[in-house]
Image (cartoon, rainbow, N blue to C red; front, side, top):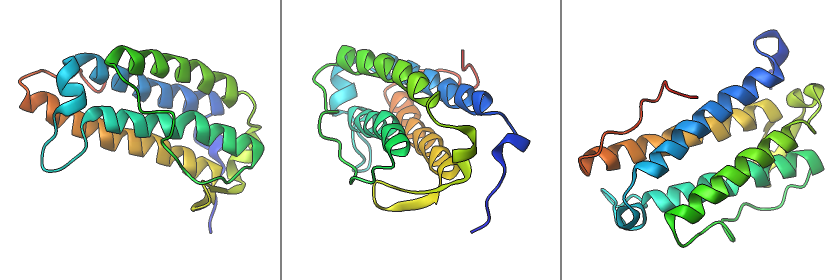
Length: 161
């Protein structure tokens, strides 16, 4: 598998800022939902946005911890299904700070090393991180559809700070 030198395109700090910018927008999507609809509203059999937020929370920090420790334990959402929108926002903010702390523990040269994330995604670490970002954008898009269907204007995706 071909690898890329991530530092030739953007720095480790720029990649983190890019990811955190997406997380900022996703947080604003969570905020935009009315409480009831956050947990109950769905279209076409998709999960409510609370379920999508649980998935995003269960990937970000656990995956970075796995990368640092090289632990390929299976993926689980256990412990990430919360009871209120306020709980999700608090957990989101805690995860944001934890991501910053964990990020600093990953040496830049490790980004090109292959790691079998959750025992099923064997790619260079930088590709796993792109997956975190892409997955979040994908689910946030679902949230945008839900908000529009509810008559709520979603936040602008380009306003990342």
